[in-house]
Image 1 (cartoon, one colour):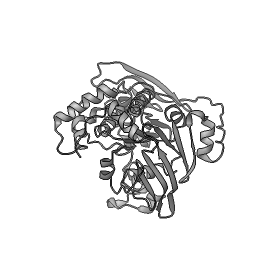
Image 2 (cartoon, rainbow, N blue to C red):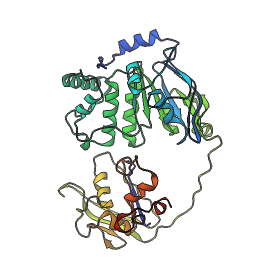
Image 3 (spheres, rainbow, N blue to C red):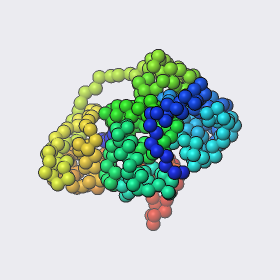
Image 4 (cartoon, helix red, strand yellow):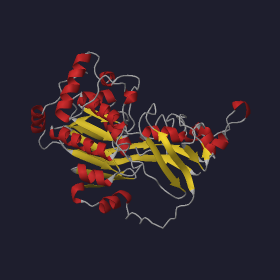
Length: 399
């Protein structure tokens, strides 16, 4: 492989005001908004959650920290009613409850923004939000709610714009607004910054602090230590499905949190000097505007180099990656050269044959088919498992 391209990149109640939220905090003073006691969830061959205890106070931003596979997402799905626990109990405002479906969770006042968005790309922002509300809610009420939320939390959105044309950060904002339109008392965010640029992360944190100040509890799921220390007041650390500790992340160091999360001090990262080799990719005079009436781009990538592409969403990164990967074959002749070969008109398959690989910004739906096994996903880009007449060779795909 010669080149890898990666993009880092119920009826509706009134929107809660700080006054009504303050009253809800007062009535629940000293009582956790949500409490989990000994919650366990087993799957064949693995215990995803092993006797988990968790307590979230009203108006608190509480982090659930852990490595991939530590059990964070399973625990949140239990709270949201998408998964049922095998053992343990859940308490809401001090009362034992059974959350057997997301609809039950929403009636209690629990809202969740999943790591992978659930939006209809061919519908507008307002229509997507409308779909998440009770059928009795009018479109006018949705528009009014959008205005109110924009005023209170700075969550401005183009209500009539088709979601397909939104940036990743704007799509996440649609999900958050849809959750806030139900005036939740607990908001769950699962890995909310995994696809956001640094500027978008800062805006998200400011919004979350305003939401928490209004009395809404927030469960913030992440494995990013710096973000947890900057945002959260309390942190439950999971390791291999168990609670490894409960700490105030503001008083911890990145090193101490990492050790709690991993069970040992993280290994030192080895560094070594590298020397750039011959030119692998050369971009000359490449127009990124839709009709070529904007600026052009020049860049060179040599063997052994890592070249970063930085910029705020909408400044040409997506167009560049489409042109490099072959999804857009509109590059003028001579503007894209790989190892001296003009690849501007080549298909993605032809570029892969020359050593180009692409990791897209949207992993689900664009980079992978989540409903298919890993072996079947290789068929998206590999032809070896396909025999004559289209028969699939499962053993080849698995290998």
